[in-house]
Image (cartoon, rainbow, N blue to C red; front, side):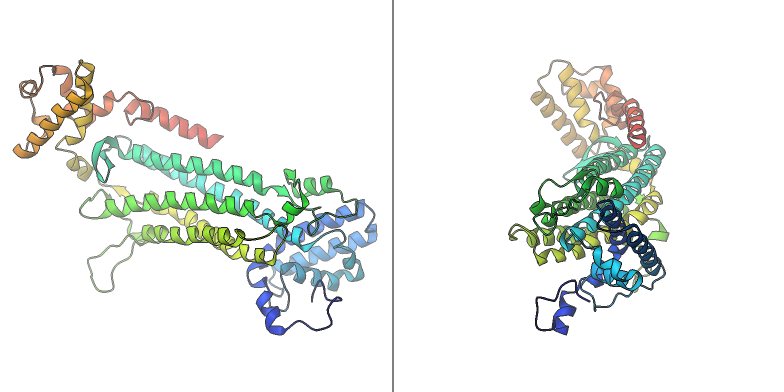
Length: 457
């Protein structure tokens, strides 16, 4: 079946029909197409295009089509151009001539955009819920390792003392920003294009206010040309997806590095790891590697849409049919990842003994010691040089920072006093951290409270 054809004298080539059909990937839009048709029929009844009897026939037919979809009886072969054509054909079967009135005042262009927006709105809501669940897992792990001291890193070299809990909370806040971006994206998705027609609206007195309320849209598109053809909302979602995936990939990189024997900071969960077909001793971080690997795929989907859109003239073009495979693939990949990642992360165990050993030489206390001298009137660049000499001598003498006595320190600067002694141990440094975002025990408790409040919003 075609929604057009009287203009043409020749039948469509079978090969071309198969080539142009999007049914193989837009079939998932069926429930949303049915929902839009239901609202459209009610609106046409309100403006007296459909009689009450015709409306009843169409609504009953739509219920039948919905049941066909749910029970797998809705055909999905290539004999139809798309899901909209298939559903319209099935409506003719169930509702007869009344169904021929349903497309009045409406283009398939705006219908496609509306269906995708409704679908994407639902998926965003689901993904937001999954992110919230992941954040709860982060909070639980961060609380568990709130006092587990470890080094932070810059350039992948030990930097300053933090806690494993503080590191995990850095993951929490990344996803808090991701939620805000997704919520903004949802607002842009939730704009109704119905009433735009193919590009220039309709002469029928369509009740767009009714349609907005019926389909729970937050706003109506301002311009008919833009409404039917824009895919900014798809770009926004894919941008949000890329950022989420990059954040996940960064966490995976941490876990992969930390699981190597050269770090030994974490133990990989066996239920989410694999072995080697050749080397019996191996335990591989496949779950983290697969999530990391899918990042390129999702970034590629964003690039595909950007390249699709970059050269299109104003108004609808058939090229836009190709927006769905990258969009649907990104949604599928993210959904699968977010459904498993919380369980994988929660099963990770930090090796507290190994973390303690990795900071035992105390070199990560260097910044705090330099800042101590700054409080005693030593210019910071001079203090930096003094502590640098101490670190160099410690390395040469195989001496820990905590081995130093006050007399040793005074050999480097008379400004040292007994107050500096707690700063020779990472735990002592943590207790004296003063800035709001720092990993001090007091600030960490405040951070946890802020995180719980953010989840309640």
